[in-house]
Structures are given as structure tokens and as C-alpha cells.
Amino acid sequence: MDLFRRAGELYRAGRMFDALEAAQAACEHAPKDAPAWHLLAKVARHCHLPAASDDAFRRAASLDPALRPPLRLSETEFRQLLDEIAPGVAIEVRSLPTPEQVRAGLDPDSVAAPDAETGQVTLFGDNLNQASASLAELREYIGRNLSEVKR
Picture 1 (cartoon, rainbow, N blue to C red):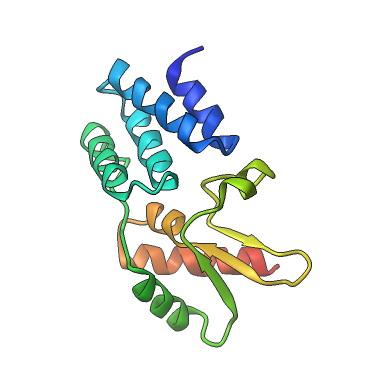
Picture 2 (picture 1 turned 135 degrees about the vertical axis):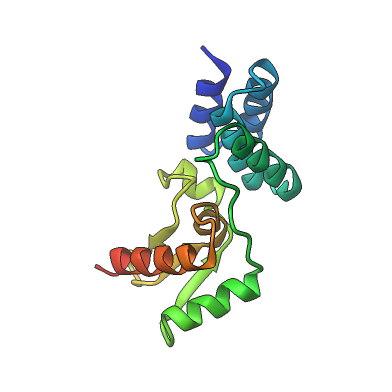
């Protein structure tokens, strides 16, 4: 099986450190493969390696401009943005889905997850940031995702 595909399978299964090894090997094997670097960036973020993640995002973007580096806001900046977009709405914020959530079936790239029992919405800040290259884009993306999970 090819390394990139294996890394993706491990990532989606919540086996982040195994996925990290496979993604690193995929990048070593094919150093000009932008999707491999993009996957490595996402896996590294889940493994709590933000500098390695940002380096891999930059590498992916240098190889394929469509893979733009993500916007990075601090937790405080992200919370302030949420308060502007949805004042008074109780929203839990986490950086990323946990490996346990991923193993239970949540996509590791999910940006939001509603709790069926409580109705509480959890937003995953790092994944929202990864999908946005500007503050305006992030603002629009958060608003759209809050609308979708509240339905």
C-alpha cells in the first residue's frame, strides 16, 4: 500500500502517531507531493507539533498554491471572534477533535460537532483556522458552520 494512502487511513482512524510516521515517510519518498505535505501538516497538528505542522503547511503551499497556509489565531482571538459572530451563544471551543472522538467516527478535519443530548456545539478552532486564509474568510466560515450545526 502506498505510504500516503496508509497515512490517510491511520489519520482517519485516530491513530495519529502512526499516521505521523507514515506521513513523514510519504514526504521523504515523494518530497514534491503537495498533498503528502498537507496531510503531514494536519497530522502534526493533531500530534501537538504546531511548528512542524506550520512548516509542512508552508511546504504544501509552496508546491501547490491552492493549498494556502492557514490563518492562525490565538484562543483568545478566536473566542473574541466568536463573541462578535454569535454573542450570547454557548459554544465550546477545542483546538481539534480528540483521538477518541475520531476513533468513534468523527472526521479529524471536522470543524464543528453538536452534542445530541445537550444541544451544545463544539467548534474546533484549529480546523476552522486551517480552512481559512484570512479573517474575513474565517468569519464567514464560522457563521456558515454554526448555522449548519444548529439545524
